[in-house]
Length: 447
Image (cartoon, rainbow, N blue to C red):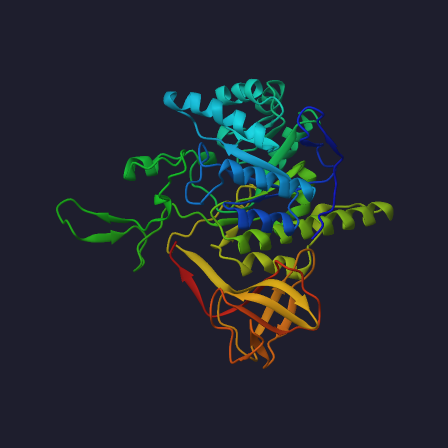
């Protein structure tokens, strides 16, 4: 899929590295924990993708990228008009400083566009070691006011990723009191953290695993009970439920229904959380937010051209877009801290994710009225499935009694994961599309 270009691209005469100016429209920023997810993000419309190398990033659960893979990812993104940002956002200890210095130089050489940092020392080092890289200040830095944002810009930051604890009016004030050339990045979707801007020590205390160094055991999601010292072994739930209490279990953020308000508050980059999530999650959420942004901007332009007020509160994305967050693995949703009168939510009576939809196939191609795919889960004749493609509502399809294997032989079902199958489909389908269906028994699974 060709991604719409919204920026002017030129090339450095010294490095032949693309220099992409800030886009004239809000950037949809997608996560990626591996190359499959990275390519899915770009193919499904991401303006930029953030990821991590093997070192100095705050996510160790994803496989993450070698330097060669970062180079490949940068080329893949740049060829399609997208950008790549790499996290270097730990708070380093003394023994890590020289390793970070070497790593920043390596990132500059492999062609990435920006480095995401928390520590001010790392920021100043990046200016010296990798002057061509944009510097983005991580949400871990806890930027909550325009004074801090403007000061970081004066020190060389191109972008600040604001603390997640800010409301719409807070973001608007920061935008109004900072230079236009400073990008404002805000989280709009995904997992929330109970700690201020993610700076948490619970995992360190309970397990010895540093959340800041990407090893968080997520103890905030565990079930907690109370035990009285004279009655060992007798556990009492904090809340009066049979399942105990998940006292720190925050809900996921979902700002898709309010995308216009986020844009008008001044966010120039809309960030989706999820570097540990699947390629399907990345594709679906990137597609949803990119389409929602496009719909809002078109709606706003139409209202302005008609001489009418374009109040973002009056805009509602298409119904299929509002459904998309519920077709990926998710917790209960809330709007985070975006609204003062609507507090961030938590589930104290349960943990885990809802998984109401499952992926049944990855499309390889389409030809002569048949779609070819790699099986993921069982598909049988008569089953209703959806095919998710970039930029359009999902295609509805009832599976005909004509499933064939890779040799063209009839198959009663596509029931062998990783095997190639085909089935009738009148409309063309692009490679990389996701085939999904409702789970027969929707579940709430533990993480």
